[in-house]
Length: 197
Image 1 (cartoon, rainbow, N blue to C red):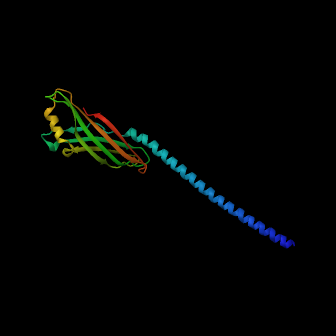
Image 2: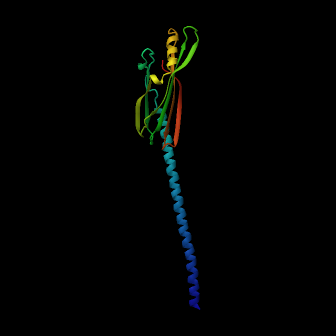
Image 3: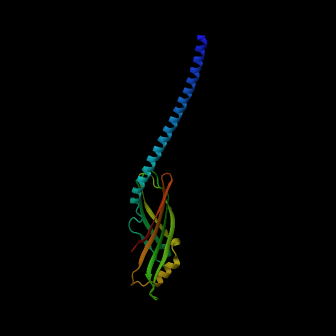
């Protein structure tokens, strides 16, 4: 009888031990899973905070135009017509700036010699891509256009009808866009009526 009791006790103990062993293994797997998820969430949080803190420094360091803009609208020598706009972008962030695009529209506001009316006409328009800016580096260059980017009709009308004794104002609109943080963050900004003269 004691052998039978011992066998039943051992069998019951073994079954309960196996059940407990299964619970411990399941709990360990769950614990490892939750620790991995926690570490992943923390890593993504730190990367995002790093990306966003770098963005503010990038915004402060973008200079378009970076200095004087060269504008030549001589209709008598169309091959010499050009616009040159210097730019400076300093990427102080941890990630590359990619897919950089710039759009520039230049307009002139003048008084017509005959009618004495005030006109604003767009004389130049161009969209172009800039090279990528690697992390912790600067991008310095020039964006420009030539005869094909000018609205020649508007330029000729301006040159033939302008009253040179009245104020002439050139201004440009700049739209700039780029991607950051493995292209997950896309942003653009618009500078309206930036004066040239």
